[in-house]
Amino acid sequence: MTAHIIDGKAIAQEVRAEWKVRADALKARGIMPGLAVIIVGEDAASKIYVGNKVKACAELGIHSEHIALSADTHEATLLAKIAELNADPAIHGILVQLPVPKHIDSNKVLEAISPGKDVDGFHPQNVGALVTGSTLFPPCTPYGAMKLLEKTGIEIEGKHAVVVGRSNIVGKPMALMLLHKNATVTICTSRTRDLARHTRDADILVVATGKPQMITGDMIKPGAAVIDVGINRLPSGKLVGDVDFDSAKEVAGWITPVPGGVGPMTITMLVANTVQAAERGAK
Ligand code: NDP
Image (cartoon, rainbow, N blue to C red):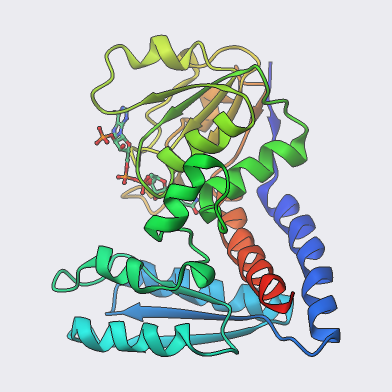
């Protein structure tokens, strides 16, 4: 069996087109959705992510501000900048690219962002609301993974979903979102005994571990939907996921490639959250 490839690039284009219609409707009413992205320091990967976020806003024709602060910026200066953006009516979404330098308390930073502008969905108020199914902003990566399932027509209700990884930004919110769609959810971590026993029982398998190619074909149930969140660069320079694509695609029913799977969706959902924030403000 060879799996259907879930084309994240194509689905991201489709979803962006849907949100462009909504952004254009706001612009026709004189409201320009605006996103502020703050980066502190010189982390090369973070710079690329921020550049891609700003580019996605430009493609959709919405306003974005790229605020680059030096690595030695005081925490108080960053918090003051966030307070300024919280009060700025031209800005509907604020995100601070993580990680921030060690001398800055990332929890303090996330709590400083107004929950109504927290387009990454990391403010404790939005995280809490995610548990009850009422968050203003679903975190972008799991939100994007859910969209891939929805757009591919993969049924979630009643299915056994296994999420490997429990980070605050991917694993935990992903598990909650699947639960809200009535999946039976198992969460696996580095402490899970006999991981393969769990993954082999998954109708939907979501992998977010940061361990290159750790899930192999023999760990997958025939016909399963496999969502690979991982992005890892091998010493050879090749980009791979947390799933061994070549062996997995022979067993799975559907699978996301890396690159071109979840990655393009993350930025798309960030733009979606920004437009949605502007819509809320316009009511
Ligand atoms: P974290 O390092 O924060 O979390 C990794 C999780 O995986 C932890 O919960 C850890 O368990 C678990 N884990 C690690 N090894 C194993 C193992 N052998 N068996 C089972 N569980 C294991 O990573 P993130 O969630 O931030 O990111 C995960 C991956 O997703 C990375 O490759 C990252 O680059 C990628 N990513 C991709 C994005 C995208 O846009 N596509 C966005 C964000 C991340 P424990 O808690 O016990 O330590």
